[in-house]
Length: 150
Figure 1 (cartoon, one colour):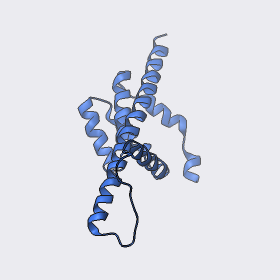
Figure 2 (cartoon, helix red, strand yellow):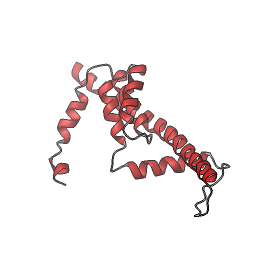
Figure 3 (cartoon, helix red, strand yellow):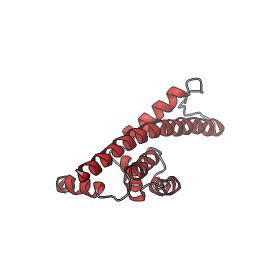
C-alpha cells in the first residue's frame, strides 16, 4: 500500500508527455504496446510489443509502457473479458465440459477450444483498446504541440 501512496502520477505523466517524436509516432508505439498487452503471453508481451513497434515504426518506450495494461491487478478481469468476447464470436464452437472422467484427447481438444476463444478475444479486445488508446494519445500529443506553438 505504501508503494501506491508514493507513486507520483505527475512525474509519470510528465515522463510520458516528454517523449520525442510526432504525435502519430508516439500514439502508434503506445497503441502497439496496449494491443500486445492484451494477450496472455506472460513475460513475452513487452518483447512482442517492442518488436511490433519497431516494425510499425512507433515509439519503443511507449510500446513497452503500453504492455502494462495487463498486470497482476488486471490479469483476471482482462483475460475473462477476452475469453467472453472470443466465446461470443465462436458461438457454434463446442462448449468446454469439465468432467473427472475426461479422456486425454478430449482434454487437449478442450484446451484448444479454450485457447482459441482466449486468443480471438484478446485480438479483438486488443484492437479496440489499442485504437481508443492510440486516438487519445494522438490527440494529447497534438494538443501539447499546439500549446507549445502559441
